[in-house]
Image (tube, rainbow, N blue to C red; front, top):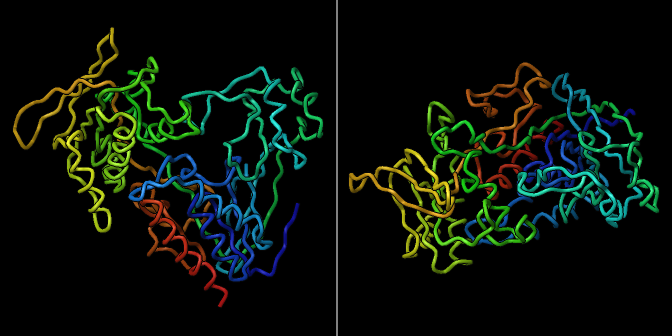
Length: 419
């Protein structure tokens, strides 16, 4: 498959909030856009959130508006399950090689769910961070765009089963689909590859992956979300019981030379936001936030003050030394030094949430050699040659609003090369 254009076009790698915003802003002023996303659906990490801070509103409305703007704009061509294999060329004339992985479901899909009803194979749900399961054929999430099912070929039995093929009356399932490779020629490229949560299993003293009731902040978002694994009820993973107490551990691996030496800037606010989830569901629950320094600058200061005023939320200045578990009750004891009192403290809670940092999703291998990254893998924007740009968390850890603002500016840079 070959795609040609007059070079007044932009390739955007990554279909999260930054990538979608860049695509929409460039297309709505008249430029051709190719939006490349490796997941089955656009939206990135934002669609996995329960609420934004500080207004505490759900992301669905804003994401759906972006989906509509992409859907109705003929200048945006989007490709899901797609990966960039190579970028070569010079400003104004980049050749991008894209691999389109098979979905095994074609455009006839109506998302009727009949295929899921007969599928005998289960897989961990990446949307819910493996806290529940989907079938081998599944919809990425209830707002998925495109609204098409996808088959996980790592677990699907394919022709050995084929029950989904028989169940689909629209002939939408093609188990013989193969990968395709195609090239596009564009004038500029935008990296909007987003971020992943730090691998908390590397932090030995915090016992993530060993104690079931120690979870990460990203998983807490899914527990609190109405479309999450517990339908929005915050329950202990070990026994699905309601909680009476919870601890949030800030800088879980961050600001640590052995893990992430930098501050991810949004983790304090994310934990305070999640503390409000707990207080909303459990008015009598005790919440403890263990921190090194609270980062809530600018317009977020008021949010911090509001949370701090809650007498059921305790801020404890001190780095957590270890977490232990009661073998019978599965309750957790958090051990830390309270810096302000100079005493070692012990707090026994039902659950612990680790505020893990943001790690950039790089694609260094496929990009030209002149892309400059810092020691942590973030793109250094001021050192790039004209023609290739970065947006959002590809450059630095950022909240959603900051990513949207940055992506709008990046769209302007990406089209200025044509002037």
